[in-house]
Image (cartoon, rainbow over all chains, first blue to last red; front, side, top):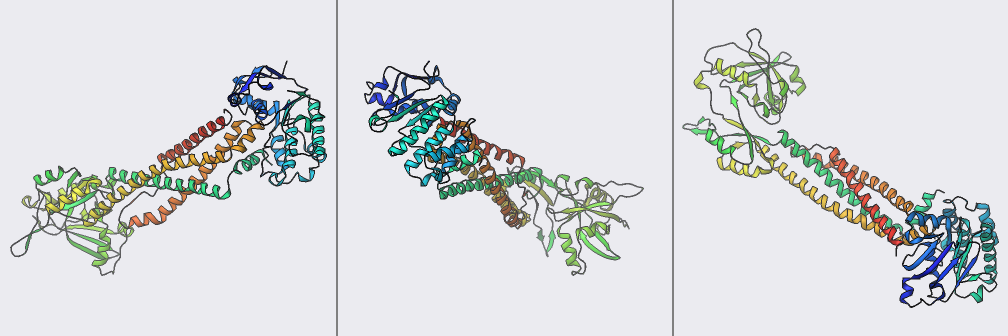
Length: 215
Length: 407
């Protein structure tokens, strides 16, 4: 059974822009645990919107969004909170790091609230792998966007999840850093038996070597 | 670091320090106005209660001016029944109490350690016990053949000052001194038969209200029936005590002036002051309630602004899987602590100013207010206001949080 199902799902703003012929926004699309999915399209086609719908941040759509066999239209605040807490982990396009906290505090804020989160040693090891361990105690406000992008990813990997949702996660990374990040992501997703949904403007240029289902 | 401190740092990061300070000061100002309003209401209530109890400035003594006839001989005037009825018909007049006077002048001898002070030429008066503002419980006397009980007398507060004046300052008496000294009342004039009668007396209290020596009516009746010829006993009162409505004192004042009655000007003034201050307190109270509505609106707008400025932070928190109730709880706890601290500070400051500045100032006008910090009614009122503010804010924050995720 699909863990996530788009059944003729159509965001209202995109219908008004006549995007109902785009691949993602008509018919059924299933997302199975243990697989990686890429949503590749140019700007304005609803990549971020798709992740927002799965996160429950947006609810302005027609059709059905089925999660674990349940129509999310009927979910309460608590069910959405539970899904966000245990079901998904997100790296939003804007990253949404708290600028007045240090990089480590940003991660701590999340891990301190959930059981089965990564411990501090694990986080330090990941930070070393991404070559940002010296920045753990720096405030997020002073970091570059590329550095923040990697810390946002560490925050996402640190909490428990069934689905990792990455919204253009390599937009400010060079080829070498993309490779390191991708290794980390794949290892963690596989170790947790989770699924991955990643969005990007261009699959060929940056994700050419990735083995994933193109949606 | 605790989860709560993270949340606090994140949620206040949307505001600049100067904005935070301004909003807290605005809230404090609202609570100061609220405190003034409620303190004014407490005092307004105390004035109203005092009026209901008949204590204080709501009773004045009226007399008719002495008429001179031929060769400067004075003729005393009495209140006729028609005049009393006319006075009683005023809306400002609540009750009229005539004074009953004994027709024999009395001497009061105070034995101060073997040195007697003699005060002559005063008449004893009696009046309804409702007007007695002190010593009501011991205010009785009855004739007995075997042993005459001491006569309780009520002296005007001015008496102590007068005794000092009479002795050229040689003897200065305090209230406590008089209660331990030996006192005697002696009938000395207008006697229908010669007598050596004397009566032991005791000070039952001091009247702030009446400038006469008062004794129980039973004693005055005894004097009139035993030491005065019946034709010398006055049947009409020379003086009356009028219990009046403070708020309508102007009507009474005009009537008194029109009739040419005499009264204690200071009583009249204090009555006017009381009416003035009552109006002022009422004004403060009404202003306070108006400001309260404004401050409630201000608080709501402030919190709304805080949430709007923290919208991105709140969304980011919720995306991480944190329940909206955690955010709501943070706001409510924070506001509750802020409300309690600010309201307590404001009330303490306003009460201190009232106690050390306002009440001493009012005392100059012989105007007594209770000076209590807070009555239970006011405490309940404040509690309801603060709880109401929290509830309204909670509802607003909850609606705002839901709106963020229902677009």
